[in-house]
Length: 121
Image (cartoon, rainbow, N blue to C red; front, side, top):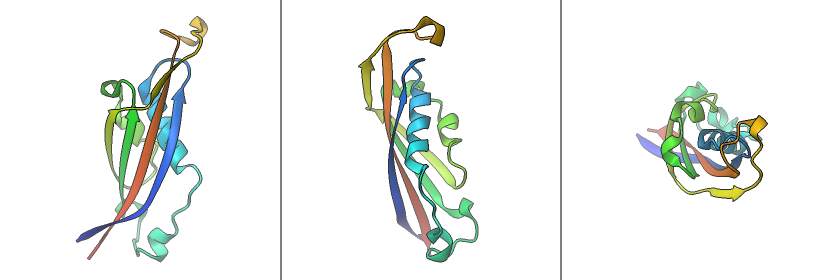
Protein backbone atom coordinates (compact mmCIF):
# COMPACT_ATOMS: atom_id res chain seq x y z
CA UNK A 1 0.00 0.00 0.00
CA UNK A 2 1.17 3.50 -0.84
CA UNK A 3 0.17 6.42 1.29
CA UNK A 4 -0.80 9.59 -0.60
CA UNK A 5 -1.60 12.96 0.94
CA UNK A 6 -5.05 14.06 -0.16
CA UNK A 7 -5.36 17.45 1.55
CA UNK A 8 -3.61 19.55 4.21
CA UNK A 9 -5.59 22.16 6.12
CA UNK A 10 -4.16 24.66 8.60
CA UNK A 11 -5.84 26.36 11.53
CA UNK A 12 -5.33 28.52 14.56
CA UNK A 13 -7.01 28.38 17.96
CA UNK A 14 -6.89 30.53 21.07
CA UNK A 15 -7.82 30.05 24.70
CA UNK A 16 -8.16 33.64 25.88
CA UNK A 17 -9.24 32.70 29.39
CA UNK A 18 -8.44 29.54 31.27
CA UNK A 19 -4.88 29.02 30.03
CA UNK A 20 -5.66 25.55 28.68
CA UNK A 21 -3.47 24.40 25.78
CA UNK A 22 -5.95 21.60 25.03
CA UNK A 23 -8.71 24.15 24.39
CA UNK A 24 -6.43 26.15 22.08
CA UNK A 25 -5.29 23.00 20.25
CA UNK A 26 -8.85 21.69 19.77
CA UNK A 27 -9.95 25.08 18.46
CA UNK A 28 -7.03 25.11 16.02
CA UNK A 29 -8.01 21.69 14.66
CA UNK A 30 -11.67 22.73 14.45
CA UNK A 31 -10.62 25.88 12.58
CA UNK A 32 -8.55 23.81 10.14
CA UNK A 33 -11.48 21.56 9.19
CA UNK A 34 -14.32 24.05 9.58
CA UNK A 35 -14.93 24.95 5.95
CA UNK A 36 -14.19 21.93 3.84
CA UNK A 37 -16.00 19.01 2.35
CA UNK A 38 -14.14 16.00 1.03
CA UNK A 39 -16.26 14.42 -1.71
CA UNK A 40 -13.01 13.48 -3.42
CA UNK A 41 -12.46 10.87 -0.72
CA UNK A 42 -15.26 8.92 -2.41
CA UNK A 43 -15.28 10.28 -5.97
CA UNK A 44 -11.52 10.39 -6.60
CA UNK A 45 -9.85 8.19 -4.00
CA UNK A 46 -12.59 5.56 -4.03
CA UNK A 47 -13.01 5.03 -0.31
CA UNK A 48 -16.28 3.46 0.77
CA UNK A 49 -16.37 5.08 4.24
CA UNK A 50 -14.68 8.17 5.71
CA UNK A 51 -13.16 6.11 8.51
CA UNK A 52 -10.87 4.58 5.88
CA UNK A 53 -8.96 7.84 5.52
CA UNK A 54 -5.92 8.44 7.69
CA UNK A 55 -5.97 11.79 9.49
CA UNK A 56 -2.68 13.01 10.91
CA UNK A 57 -2.82 16.10 13.12
CA UNK A 58 0.17 18.18 14.10
CA UNK A 59 -0.28 20.90 16.73
CA UNK A 60 2.23 23.45 18.00
CA UNK A 61 1.22 25.02 21.31
CA UNK A 62 2.76 26.36 24.51
CA UNK A 63 2.85 23.77 27.29
CA UNK A 64 2.48 20.79 24.92
CA UNK A 65 2.88 18.32 27.78
CA UNK A 66 -0.49 19.47 29.16
CA UNK A 67 -2.48 18.71 25.99
CA UNK A 68 -5.11 15.99 26.41
CA UNK A 69 -4.77 14.14 23.11
CA UNK A 70 -8.16 12.43 23.19
CA UNK A 71 -10.00 15.76 23.49
CA UNK A 72 -8.16 17.24 20.51
CA UNK A 73 -8.77 14.17 18.33
CA UNK A 74 -12.45 14.14 19.32
CA UNK A 75 -12.88 17.24 17.13
CA UNK A 76 -12.38 15.05 14.05
CA UNK A 77 -15.59 13.26 13.04
CA UNK A 78 -13.97 10.46 11.00
CA UNK A 79 -10.74 8.74 10.14
CA UNK A 80 -7.90 6.76 11.61
CA UNK A 81 -6.61 9.61 13.76
CA UNK A 82 -3.20 10.42 15.19
CA UNK A 83 -1.85 13.49 16.95
CA UNK A 84 1.63 14.94 17.32
CA UNK A 85 1.98 17.85 19.74
CA UNK A 86 5.07 20.01 19.86
CA UNK A 87 6.25 23.17 21.52
CA UNK A 88 5.21 26.24 19.57
CA UNK A 89 2.33 28.59 19.16
CA UNK A 90 2.37 31.76 21.18
CA UNK A 91 1.60 33.26 24.56
CA UNK A 92 0.11 36.75 24.55
CA UNK A 93 -0.51 38.63 27.78
CA UNK A 94 -4.04 39.96 28.14
CA UNK A 95 -6.18 40.51 31.20
CA UNK A 96 -6.85 37.98 33.95
CA UNK A 97 -10.52 37.87 34.93
CA UNK A 98 -11.16 35.84 38.09
CA UNK A 99 -14.80 35.12 37.16
CA UNK A 100 -13.52 33.30 34.06
CA UNK A 101 -11.22 31.08 36.17
CA UNK A 102 -8.07 32.72 34.82
CA UNK A 103 -4.91 31.53 36.55
CA UNK A 104 -2.93 34.41 35.03
CA UNK A 105 -3.12 36.84 32.09
CA UNK A 106 -1.84 34.42 29.42
CA UNK A 107 -3.74 33.83 26.20
CA UNK A 108 -2.65 30.51 24.66
CA UNK A 109 -2.43 30.35 20.85
CA UNK A 110 -2.06 27.06 18.96
CA UNK A 111 -1.41 26.27 15.29
CA UNK A 112 -2.58 23.05 13.67
CA UNK A 113 -2.05 21.18 10.42
CA UNK A 114 -4.51 18.42 9.56
CA UNK A 115 -3.41 16.05 6.81
CA UNK A 116 -5.77 13.54 5.19
CA UNK A 117 -3.95 10.56 3.74
CA UNK A 118 -5.33 7.87 1.46
CA UNK A 119 -3.80 4.40 1.15
CA UNK A 120 -3.75 3.14 -2.43
CA UNK A 121 -2.74 -0.26 -3.77
